[in-house]
Structures are given as structure tokens and as C-alpha cells.
Image (cartoon, rainbow, N blue to C red; front, side, top):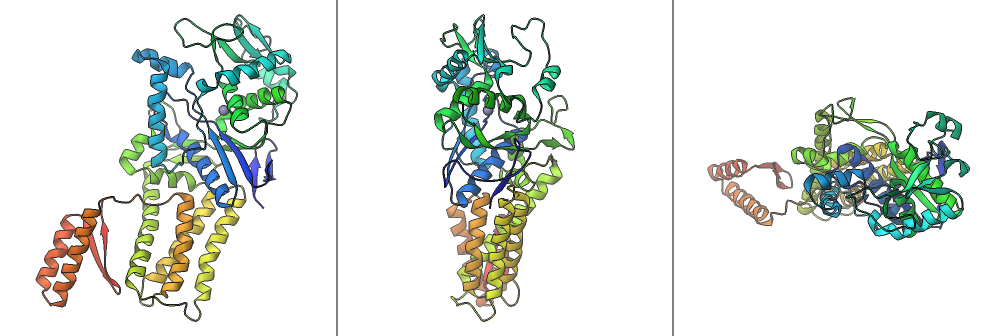
Length: 470
Ligand SMILES: [Zn+2]
């Protein structure tokens, strides 16, 4: 049984989809006015992993993640640069895909843009006005919060508490401080679209309701995002969607925790606001992915130089294991399972079972990855040392290793330099020949030359292994 902690119920709920075998999943995507930072990355990596895991468990997943391409920040940046909003959006959508690819985040099934859904947005706003859930004032349209039964159910706050906590603006055109904008009248010089209430642009919350309904339908399985989106963004998405369709909106609400930087909240004023691009240039992308997935998605996590270096070293253990196993299989005779090796194969399989058990229980990637490291340890001792296992046993372990590393996205990017690798292999063959001919001076010369190019050799029972240092 798969279960998730569901923000709306406040407990772990068994995962049962609307349609058997299919998952409809939505995550709130980035506002595209800049490179994304490590806090945004957590959300992208965590929910990419959730999607991968559900696919691994046999579900057909339709995953929608939007781009907010129109909002105050996009407009401000466009004005600063003297270009139109869509130039800024297109640039940072490109940059998003570069960073996402590096992080091993697969493209969603659909990445819709807010501005490609203006018609769908207007349909919902119109329907909410018709039903009395929304009202127009001077070209703006607001959602009438107190008409929504159950408003506050996601954040677990009764509407009276929310009302007393809401900021009251004297110049507000709203009937109630909790009401929020569905449509905003155009200000001079801003991009605007035609509507029944005059030229304007959509508010932020409404775009997600529109894209959910358009691409996934009126009732979806999983809605996810960062914890900071619970109120008001997700609360408002529920209100708009359910008041419009009359149907329950999303069954499971999953929210990831915050990232602190050096144990302090990330903020521009503290100067600890790192973009993923900056971190990746120093450490590579995959250590960021590993760092994020090594914690439970709901726990707050702390980012520091030491932690990212630890993640890089931990990944290296996985990559070294892959290299050792490949080398072993390439250089060992084909051999069937030996007597007594059933226990070893059972241990490999137990790692996989442990991973599934952890991930089924509220998507515990921390314990899931720990199970992968158990497998790495067992595989290393199967191929290294004086009495290596049979090739059949190692192959059984490798199949599980490949399955789990692919699932977590911990696969080393190929060096891509085939010519260099061919050169190394040639040099190793020449060195082996030299050693055989007892020409040790020549063998040492070849080793030293390779070392000067960053290639480290290691002689093993199966032959000479090499490692390329970066
Ligand atoms: Zn959203």
C-alpha cells in the first residue's frame, strides 16, 4: 500500500487514484523572470522523483507543471530591460530547462504557459461571477471568499481566524479583506487581454485552476508544491476550482519543506541567495539532486558547502561501484551461480524491497537512498577482494543497481570523449605488454604519463582499472 501525508487531512492517507492505474498530478511551476534558486530546485527535484516513483510502481502519470509567464516580477524585469514580457519569459524558460536537465528533472507531460490559457481563465472567472462567487469592481474581479464553503480547509484555519488576520487596506476595493483578485484591470503600459470587464490580466491563483481543469480535468489525484504555497495560493486554487465545478479538486496535497542556507533562512538581504546555476558551476548538478533527495521531502533541510561536498562524495561511491562492477564483468569468466550464493542474491533483492517499503510510506527518499547504499556496499564486496562472487551473482546485483540508480536519477553523465578513452585503453594495453616483457621502465613511464593527464591506474586480479580525475 502506498500512502502519503496529505496536507488537507493532516495525516497519512492511502493512495487511491480517481482512475485505476492512472495518476493526474500538478505542480506549481516557476515564475520565469530569473534563474531559479536552490529552494525552487527542491520542489522540482522532489516532485520529479515522486513522478518517477509512481511510474516505477506501474502508474501511467500525466504530470503538468506550469510556467507563470505574466506577473509583476516578469513585467518589472521587462521594463528594466526595455523589452516585452514574453522576451523575459522565453529566456528564463530556456534557462529553466537547462538547469532542470542538469538536475535530472524530466520534462513534465505538459508545461503550459499562463498566457496560453487566457480563454480558459476567463471561462472560470465568468462562471464564478455568474454563480455569485465573484464580483467586478472598476475592471478588477475578486473572489468572494465567504461564499466558499470550507474555505481554510487546506491550511486548517477557520475563515474567522483568517479574516481577523488579514491585512486591511483602506483603499481596498474588496468587499472583504480575504477576497482575492481573479482578474486585474490593466495599468498603463502593462500587457493586457480583452475581457468582459475591460482590458486586464489574470491574477496568479486562477491560472493554476485553469490549467488543472484544461489539462487534467476537474478532479485530479495529486497537487503539489512548496510549503509556502499552502496559504493563500493553494487554498485559493481549491476555492476557485470547487466553486466553479462543484466537484472535489485534488485528492492529495503534498508539500515540500524549506531549505535553509548555513542554518539561516534564505534571503536576498543576507546575501545567501544561491541560484542552482551558481552552485552547479562549482559542484556540478547531480550533487544538488542527491542533497535534496537525501532528506525526507517534508523536513526542513540545510544547505552548506560541506553538505554539498558530502553529497558529491556520496555520489562518487555510486559511480565507483558502477565502474568496479562493469570492470569485473568485462574481465571475469562467465560463471553460473555457485552453491550458497542464493543468500547473496537475496541480499541484493532485499535492498530493493527496503527501498520500495520506504518510498511507499510517505515517499521517504532518505531511507530509499540508504537502501541503495546497502546494495552498493554488498556489490563492492562481491567484486573486490580476494574471493569475488560469480559473474551470475554480480549480474543479478547489477540489474538491481541499474534499476535503482536510474530511478533516483543518479547516473553519471558520460564523459563523451570517446577518443580519449580509446587512447587510455591503448596505453593500458601497451603497459600490460611492457610488463609481460619485463620492461618495467616502460610500464612505469606509461603509468606516469597517464597520471600527468589525470588518469589513475589500479592493478587488480582481473586486470588494470583506470579512473579519470576531473
Ligand atoms: Zn499554483
